[in-house]
Amino acid sequence: MVTEFDIALLARRTADATRGDADAAYDLGVAFSTGTTGVALDLIEAHKWFNLSAARGNVAAAGARTEIAEDMTAREIATAQRAARDLLGGMQRRAA
Image 1: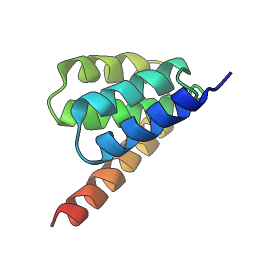
Image 2: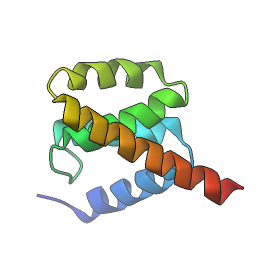
Image 3: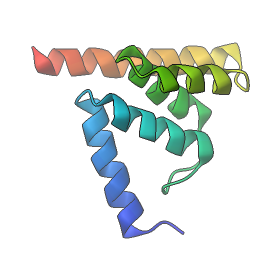
Image 4: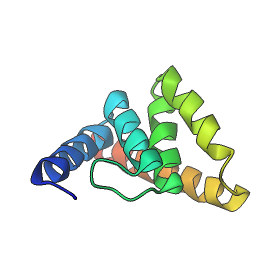
C-alpha cells in the first residue's frame, strides 16, 4: 500500500536528485531496484538514478549500478544510460 508519506518522500527525493543531490539519486536507485517507497520495481529507472549518483561520486551507487546491470539486457542498460544523459543535460541547461 502506497501512503501519502511515500508519495511525499518520493517527490522530495526526486526534486533533490534532479538538483544534483547524489544521496537522493542513490535513494531513488534503491527504491526502484527494490520496488519500495511506493514505486514499482524498474531496473532501468534504478540504473539511471544509480548512474547519476555514481557520476556525482557516490561509490555505493557505482557498485549497485554494476550489480543490477547483471540482470539487465544491453538494450535496457543503453536506455537507462540515455535517460541519465538526458536528465543530466536538462539539469546543466537549467543551471546555465
